[in-house]
Image 1 (cartoon, one colour):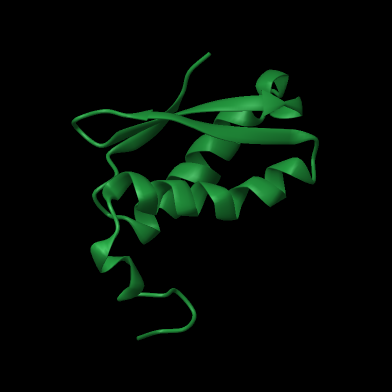
Image 2: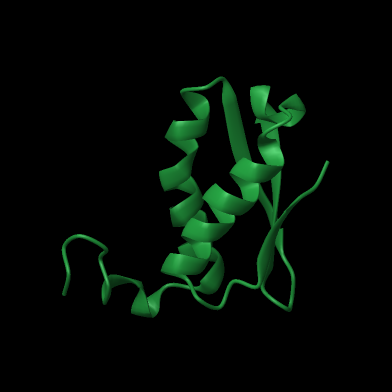
Length: 88
C-alpha cells in the first residue's frame, strides 16, 4: 500500500465516501481564502454536484477553481468521476 495516496485503503469505501474524502482534503485550501465547498449530490452518471460557499460563491475565478482544481483532483484520485458542477 502506498502511504502517499492511500491506494488500497479505499477498496471497501463507497463511491460517495471516496468523493467526500477528497472534497474534505480540498476544503482547507478554499477556507484559507474565505470560501468553502459542500458535496450536494452525485448523479447516476457519476457527475459530482457541489455548492461553493463564502468568498467562492461570488468569485470570478470560481469556475476555474472548480474545473482545474476540484474536478482535476477528483478525476485523478477517482477516475470514475465524470465531471464536477456547481449548483446553487
